[in-house]
Image (tube, rainbow, N blue to C red; front, side):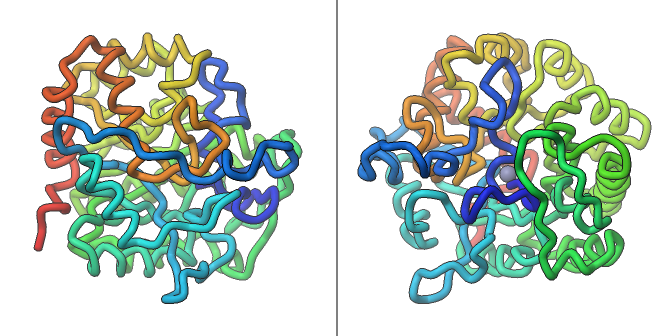
Length: 356
Ligand SMILES: [Zn+2]
């Protein structure tokens, strides 16, 4: 999620991890369900995509933002990163059911702003299929430091009440929940040099990233990294500070250089919807280089909907498209790939979806 930079409700968040500028995905366009409000597309084309046929094996969505909803289905926080643009959110039971019907048996839901932390951990306690990750998103880190300089992409930063907390106080909220046994990762943390302008904003992100890495190392939990236009800086910090034992590049957007660094250091590469985008040959080439045992798959829903469904909101059940694309890129048997991906999810996070 992006947090902090809101182009209008529902979208705002989004952006960030989306539209990875990698490989010419067309930066800023990756976001789904947002940004299309002014197009003349028929409304029926902008809702959640139809489900594909089931995968031949079980897989786990390693990174999603499940919406936090009141019993009547309305968002608890209108700026919740899990609220899609262009469609009503899908409630948790329906998310789980639809995902399960196509073979997506587990979901790691990522809370990366203060308002969504506790609710996401609660979801993970209430549903065996859901695990939680907690962190302060890099763009949120800049806002807690009261830095309002965003990169020149036209979106305004928007301070909310929770940004009154200092960076240290916000991190303390994360730390209070991080040792919970349903919290299986610290994330997403990292650097976003696309969204935040150089200077104090970058400094705030670097400090926050290093604090989150220290927390993950201390607790022995996996870390999920948000790396946007900052591959070299992220790599340098990991090597200098010491990467947690299980380090995951969420929505991998690097090229061959970063893919080789991941292979060398045993860092995991989590593949999201942009791998299906027509222009992303460089991303596909990079992902083809990653050792199979380091691959994971995710949606980052409600953002980053795979082709040809871009522009619609995303959900875990839509991940079938990304898994099939990955099998094609790798020239791998789909059933065997599903098995391998699920085994790796278990190695990185523990098989949280098999609890209870
Ligand atoms: Zn995300």
